[in-house]
Image 1 (cartoon, each protein chain N blue to C red):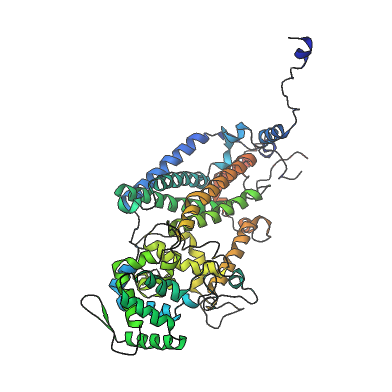
Image 2 (tube, rainbow over the protein chains, first blue to last red):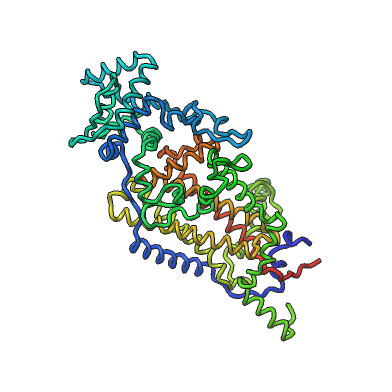
Length: 334
Length: 218
């Protein structure tokens, strides 16, 4: 008879049964774990570093903010050419041989960087600001080449810009066209907190999707600098860590480990896996490992390791000792 | 009452009752009678420290859910502005940490004891699924904290999710979607799977030690 088919009474035949109080055990576990958790909570608390806003960013590092904003307008940032699910670019599209799930899925969270991050918020802020309205009109009616020329000049100018005492940014004189006014208003909007709200604006009253402000933030360097100070960047196992000296998502250690080693970190790569498709490859490896873990009972070798490495002798040491004692004294099984 | 109407009174429903309800009842009674659901005896070999990790994992999950209910009741921003709220967040945080520690220890304990033997492969597989769903639950929790950790984890995780093609379906930057998943669908999923796991364990019983051949009638 297959052991998987026998009933529990038959399965336990010859097994010595001992008294057991399930509810008492559960109650003790609940009280014990609660006590442990209360002590940890009282002594160690939990992390809560305030979030970064466009306002705090523009005040702390206005040059980085303007560099990012002008980059969004020029379409030269990471998000501007990211690819699916944000747009039709290809800058961040990952493939593995013929596998291109990111490309196949298509655009589902549409982001038009120049329009969504700069032109639309500025257009909404033109009320009572004729200079901004004129600058927008000038920019929008200019040719693409002219727009890029102004933006390229402005970006070069930002390289030697200085921050004034009032928090404004002084860019050396140059041929920037209307970009000077546009960027000046972007900085003013951001410093007032208005840009945080404008990037959340949609056709609906209630807003819960922070895709646009978060994507704008990550295109800049400020939030990454803060993350580096907290040792949260990828090379510091950042995916599983969190702010302060807290354990974070320690259960992601294996997932995070792949980001630290070749070929996932290699530029040349191996078997088509390289730093160009790290995320896709790591997810693939983890899915494979999860499937192996799931199917351990059916995989010869993997399911036999517990017999080969007798840790079970430790787990059931009292039971085995009891069996040996019974055998030595000639006690027959029931 | 006429003789005819008296004869029309149906007989009490017995074990030979038919219909969906009777079939389900018989299946439940056969699979998990109350004596197995709430046992008063257990095999002597269960007296090992490794069996503690299962029940303390469930205990930690209980406190995770309870503290999560309190946090959800007062709203997602409450714990940032209230010291009591922050304390409940700490309880939630450390309950989750304990839940994962105990669950991993339980998993390793079951691996080295080859807990899938004697027809318990499904029990093992449900356990692995619980672990995977729990990782997803914890992830959604981290990205709805509404603080720096949420921002940084979400904007980094998006690349891995996008690379798989699921970035449009599962948008870590969408607080509303992540919050709904975290306080509703994922916890219900984990809880139901844990209930199923417990039923599997109680129905089949605890697997016998390795190299302890059972006596089965031929």
